[in-house]
Image (cartoon, rainbow over all chains, first blue to last red; front, side, top):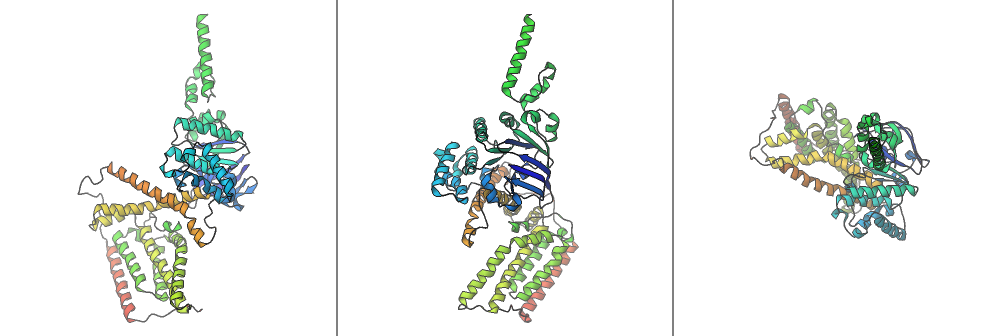
Length: 278
Length: 260
């Protein structure tokens, strides 16, 4: 469980990146954080494993105050996958890369090799076991970065912009993968600009703007609220926009799902055809 | 990484900022020379104190002190290297002279650091590039040099991000003995270096696509011009340098000694 109590954070340069954040995330949960560039999303997630400590207020991760714990202690429970995999890959092989975190947390040899194999499998990387991570493509490197964190099975997984540089297939795999994780009782928090991906995943949403949380709610509530979204420089999913522009057809306005939309259009067409034939 | 803070240009309008970059370079070089000229603790302390008014009048003391604090590790390394080497070559005897010498060597490094800090904190990369060009250094060299400097803060930010990422993987930088601590930096240095190389290749492509080197003769929008304040600074520097040389070779310098 994650609890932010009146958290504010100011960078040494004087920029206030978080203002009075109050939020509670229970386990398991699936959260997407959206908001404009510089809204404070990355600052927010850096507080989850204590890389940044609040200037004011307290943060509790599973009851532990982040001010009183080391980054390593907190990272055992909160795994953060950063945006750019090139900021963390340094080993000679993918295998060693995945083992790095496990070694840091003091797992014994047998468990390490077992976990490495498991993580490689999970992310479809087994064939790259002995390959240098620097030889892989961008999308593959991103998956390696994810595997390195998943290897120690953190209870809370945080993903910063997981969809960048991923093609449609990989995105879809990622979506299935995240949903699988949440169904296994993990909490997943992702920061993203990709509203279409968010709409597909259907998580709870936290909207941040100008260092504050301006709203929280289900994907359906938030992604169809044009006012809130425009405040955070986010455009609603295309399907929502389409339904909004077709508002005079008397269609519901809270659509984020493609299949639901398809069904509604089929129904509408059928009704029209029936009317005509009468 | 705090060391780099001392190299990051901070825009300002103080007298020091408005000096010609060439003048500032000369002053920094003078301090540098003086620091190399003297080895006695007493003179190095004076040199250090003499820099303070300049630093405070340029209002860069905060960045300057941060960079000094950042270089603390290096200072300690210099101190101990001198102590150990002296100790071994001195038949394993620790004398108060040796201690004083090692301390002044470490302090000398602080003086060198702050003279560079002073220059880079008050000189914008653009001015620096202009100064180099107007000193008839080939443009390619000027460009390489200023680009290197311009990228220092970028690299510093990147180093911080990498550190965050590796600490999130359970890396504890300040854990273990001395050797282990040095090894702890490998996961940070490798991505940093790889990133720098990758970035330089990208930069080269971007520059070529903007016709870098298409014409042999380049023109500049701005030109640097020496002002009266620059000539005055030249004069003062020259006087100080000649005086110091005179003192160095003709007047005995009082010896400070750390008692053991």
